[in-house]
Image (cartoon, rainbow, N blue to C red; front, top):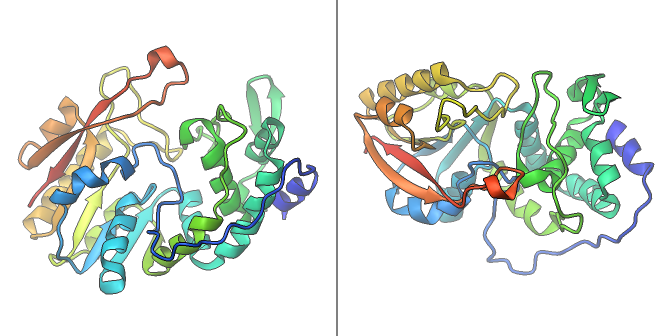
Length: 314
């Protein structure tokens, strides 16, 4: 109970009260904010998404915005499957499936204690600081924290770090600084119970995206949302896992899409609007969308918008 013990060493400085869900018609919404997430594109995508399928597959789960979209639309009339290689993310979704109330209690306690000092204590729970900018990893959080604690920590850091970026270094240590606002309300009482129902209707797996090839049939629909290709030679891939996702893997994903297409499996794929992606998927239908992506910590270097593509074979 390492995280719970850490929380107990900080005194509450504000009050968190339980918020009951009053509107039974309120739709379930994603509980994780994710760089490259599709929430802002759902309306734009909707006319391109199929209506008829048996199982919806999302092998790069991330914030799982399309899963929530389809579940809100079809409920348990469809089957759902999501997976990811990010062990913390998948553990969080599994815990929300089964232990939403307990996560809610821990997050309430964390909300009461949220300060800059508390944020870095939670973030650095697995390391020792050796210099102003260097840390030594002491343990793997999966060896010392319970799955419930891992989920609560993941959701807390996701909502309070800078721009909801998930980034780990080569040692697997989450290294994003705190966000700009200490007044942010990140309580989950009004959303966790509805998200829990979505995940209870969904098969959640920790696995590589390529494993869906063994499962999917021509009656299903799969949406790929991989780490995006860089827009230029100086750009780098976002480290969603310590192993990254490089050009070789982008080509391997394209090859998987080609094999699925030959089997009559419908797929859609999102990525950055760059020469690499347009060349890889030149034989498929490509639509372009404008999105807002403000990730740089310096205002003057942020872009108001960027272009992404949606690749389809139907």
